[in-house]
Amino acid sequence: MSLVVGSYGLQIFQVSQSKEWAEKWTTSEVYEIEARAPGDAIPTVAQVRQMMQTLLADRFQLKVSRGNQVMPVYNLVVAPGGPKLQPSAFAGSEPLTKDEGTTGLHRRLRCLNLSMADLVEAVRRQFDRPLLDKTGLTGGFDFSLDYVWQPPFGTSADAVAAVEASAGPPDLQGGLPIAASLQKELGLRVVPAREQAEILVIEHAERPSAN
Image 1: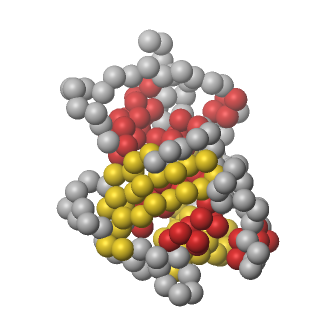
Image 2 (image 1 turned 135 degrees about the vertical axis):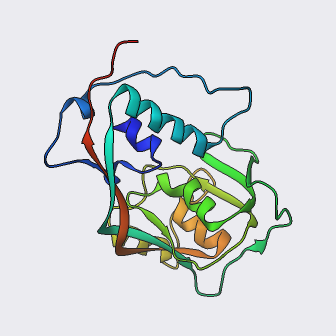
Image 3 (image 1 turned 45 degrees about the vertical axis):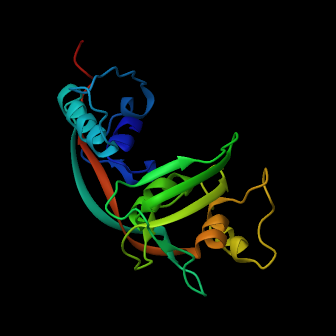
């Protein structure tokens, strides 16, 4: 199940087994995979995911279907006062994230020419629901992001309300939780909602063939 989640760029709550087919081994057995990408070039994340999907279909006979389902989500929106973002000085270049002194769980990043979709991809694992871009902002941006990595943020609207409280959340290792950092540094709010979100259903899988 974790291999499927990573290969399709989703989170565990967006993947399920079909009612017609469900096997306990898919969530209990653990596998190690050794694989080599062709050629000498370093593949992109998207290319690695596609290769992993092919591997799972070949070795696990994985068959999946995609759909959408209304579920609790977080919408990323522009905060009152507007976004604190400047158009990228590196438009036309590949998006780039540079480490600027990360220590332990305290992440300090410089992001160059990142779109809102890139930003969501970078931080979505910090949230316990799908994070959807509703900012309406287009193009690439340069910005810094400073936050403390924590277990997935929030289990209710109360968690988001705490971020918006005037006093703000407590300082953690000199940094803020991700939702508070997005609002303070980028002028973007995380708002709980119910929306259509992508889901993946495992229709069939088999234990892998021998090496």
